[in-house]
Structure formats: structure tokens, C-alpha cells
Length: 414
Ligand code: SF4
Image: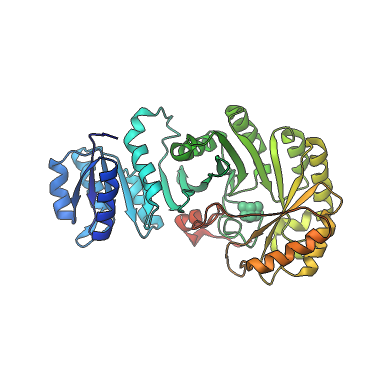
């Protein structure tokens, strides 16, 4: 690339130092390595750098000391914290001290390079203050799919970039609320981030899209946003509509809802012409069972949800996907597969089967069990889809990381 840039590295692990050497050699960027706080403090006074990469656990102290010292000396070099451990205190402190982002070890080299390039090039990008919001990057899989936590006035919120190389498609999974009150017992957001729930403003959603696009949005022509992640999107339709209006035709849109009888008509009225796909998370084909695992199911019977889903399908001319996450020993019986098939049969529905993310008593089934379940549904001539995670190595955007960072001390169980 021929950049005349220099990166300051504080790291004591030789393997990681060698990895940095290889990466920056490839990028033609020179590096300076300090292996402890003492020599780093001396070096930052003399060595001018364009980026600092700081480990947290050094034999003689924490890498945060260098952030503190830089601030004291008026050095404004952008800094990345790289660490094996993150907690609320460390994230908070590094943000306060001015770190641009944090990366968890082990990291994907591909994503690390993108982050470094982005930060070094950031001056070339025209960003609004909101778009410059500090963020924590925590997980990345080998295919480059990345999950982020960003901060909006102290509230942690997750979003993700997913890459589909085969279709040259880039998907951003966008949260619509801080936390969620729907009470799904199998979901981290529903069980741990169900306090102080509020809607995300469309400008804050735009900021997340900008951050995700910094890394991946320019690679693929097909861009897509799915309103899923944290929160129930149908409860924040006004901001979603404004967001869609701002983004124009640049993106395709999909939405995943838990299925509320009061908001499904609003989705049909306002979004039938815009959404490429509507997904309704059924997960249990019997109301009694569903109510046991999803708090709002008590006041939202399946019969009504499916009637309203049919209206969306009729107006939009598209099939509705019935999401069914299979939980081992809970909703995986072939009898329930038959009941699910009977709900979908003869209607414009496709059953989308997914494996669970492990959480408390909820665990995924094996491939063979999923295949048997699918076979039963197919025997009723109902179309099925199996969801393949595009972010192997990262959990989906369901509040795991935000909950970890916000700390669980405030968690209120429904
Ligand atoms: S699964 Fe979705 S609707 Fe249910 S609690 Fe979690 S975020 Fe809310």
C-alpha cells in the first residue's frame, strides 16, 4: 500500500508480536514494539505514531496506563485495546480514556486488518458525530462476519455484519430497541436486558449502519438490513420508517417479529410494500407451551397471529416465514413437528428451522434430529428452510455481549 505510517504496539506475548509483525509487514507499515509499561511510557514521548495497539495485561501494569499518560501529554493518537478479557469496568475505562475500539483475543486477522485500515484512513471519511460514536468490537468469525457492541449514552447495544460471499451480499442485523420486554426465556435479551427498555432513534440506527459499512459495506453491491437483534421491531415502527426513508433504495429490508396482534396490522399497513420478507417467531405450535416460554404469548394467540400473517402475505404478495428454533427436549418432538406443519399447511407460510444458541435450559439439537423434524413437515407438503449461521464462531445478535458488558447486576427476571 506504500503507506508511510507507524504503529505503536504494547504487547508482551511473543506469538502475538510475531502476528503483528507479519500483518504490518504485509501492509508496509512500520511498527515499534514496547513489551512493558515502563519502556512504553518512555517511548511515547519520543516516537510519533499514527495508531497505538495496547494490550491490557502487562507484567508491570495495565495498558490503560498508556492511554492515561497519552492524555496527560496531549497525544491524540487513536488507540485500540486488544485483550482476552473484557468486563464492564475495563470497557468503560478504555472508552473514558479515549480508546477508539476494543478487540477481543483471539481475533480474525482479516477483520483486524480492516479495523486498522479503517482507523488509519478515517480522516478521509466524512462522519457525523453520531457515526463517530465509540464502539467495542468483540467477536469475529473466520468468514469476516462480525458482531459489535456500540454505546449510546452509556447503553450497550449489539449489531452485526454478516457476509455472504456466494451471493455477494452484505447483511446488517440491526437492533431496534435497547433491551426487550417480550419475555422469551431462551433469549439473553429477554431474560437479562428487560429493564429500562426503550426504542432506538433512527439516527442511532444509521450510526450503526455506518460503522458496519466502514468494514464491509463497500465490498458487496447487494446490501440488506434485517430488523432483528435486540428488541421487538414492530414496537418501533415510526423510527424504522424514518430510517427506511433516509436509506432510500440502497438496501433491501427484512423484519423478524415475535408476533403481536396489536402491531402486525401496522406492519402490513406500513411495510408490506417495503419488506422483502417478514419472519414471525413461532417456536412452539401450541399456545399453552408457547406461553410457558414466551411471556407475551399469553395475550397473543397463534390463531390470531397466523390470520394477521396471512393478511400481510396477501397484501405484499410474499410468503411469511414461520421461525421455529428447535430446543433439545423442549420443542423437538415429531408430534410437535406435525402440529407445526398443520398450522402452516395451505397457507402462504414457509417454516424456517434454526438451531438454538445455548442459554440456560435451552440447547441445540443435532443435525440428524433437525433433519427428522424437517422431514415430518415436508411430508405435509409445507415448504421449509434451514437457517445456516453465517457467523460461525460468533453467537447471533441476541444480547449475549451487551448483557455481559452492561453487567447482570440489574437483571430482572420476568
Ligand atoms: S427473542 Fe427477540 S422478541 Fe424474544 S426477548 Fe429476545 S429480543 Fe425480544
